[in-house]
Length: 85
Length: 422
Image 1 (cartoon, chains in turn purple, orange):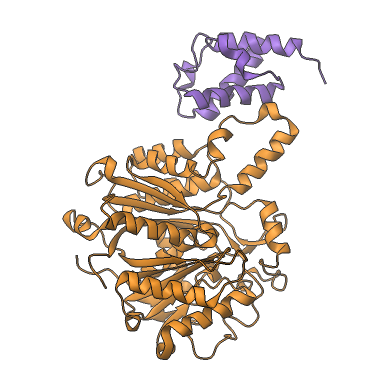
Image 2 (cartoon, helix red, strand yellow):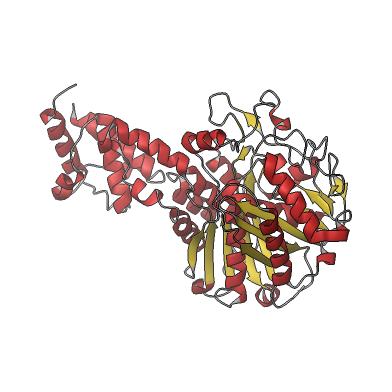
């Protein structure tokens, strides 16, 4: 799974939760909080991305993730570690 | 009418299968248009269904400033359908009440009461299915939305309310229970403005199936002719038809409404709730009569002032007859003088919202000088009651009772009156 695919998936999830957001603000260095996502929005965005990518993990493991780049790395790592169906 | 106890209705918002928005709903009442359709893939098959995905379209159609529409859209976009309906009717009611320009006083004096319980069962059902497939992908926001009180929080955020707030449950009488609690709050001086919302009952296939098995739900007989299926007070009735709908009434004190020159949609003069010591679904005519008498007493209105009754009349085999007995008991010698119709024939039974939807329908008719028809009333079950029947009538009624009776013996009635000078 490429970084680009993961980034595009995250972007789609963000825009479905925050449809009025200017798309150009969604860059790897941005944090979901900076983009205006509240605590419920943030977990909904992550779960949507997990579902699209079919990656599963407990949400508390995300505690150390600081921005979208961190989320991309985390999702890629989890997808590699996960047995394929 | 006891003017000190009467509460002003200064705004109405409504959405039903028969008409979405106050103007369309008014027209549907005038024309006797039924919103009941058949959806072969749905449980139940017959119902007054709201169009799927109509939230944003309907929001855009409201006469509200773009900032308000955007706020409601953002609050509702990912919310359960019933919450979306509450946002729509609350925004319409606020707009019509002239409250989008600002509340008359402090936000701490604005209250929200939402009538209903088990409101979003259809949404829960969808989440259960999602959970069964894969728990990891359940949207965390379900943790907020599974609560009925999510409705209260959402509507309060829309209008900036910081006063009292809660849901009011009373089965099919929930709407009237909410109206009565709202009126008491205003009378007691606990709020200046109270938004009373009747929440859209989003049944899941499970509840619908259980109601069907219970024999409460019609109609096998009229499956091919959906508009003829719901037949309150008709000899060929065979159970209630589910309706999706929501409504919001804005309540204010007479003094408060007068001070700001608020629009006048009518008066909520009083109401009553009484139990039957009976957990079943069977309506008890004595309990129904006590509710009507209690409402009249609470409102300070003599029975001879009543000229119209918006009946509960779900088209159930047992219940409609029991309501007729109760009405006759209350009206006594006036039974042939008081008009009776049943809005559920057009909208279906809006369950938790029914009391508020029908209070809206009652005020629209009192204000408009007409009474909506019941086109399916071919063979009335009683020869003495003055049913409006199949044709719309021009009638200058001024004071009405609106009944709602719930499973578990929860009987309610409210007294509504045409707009009067402050």
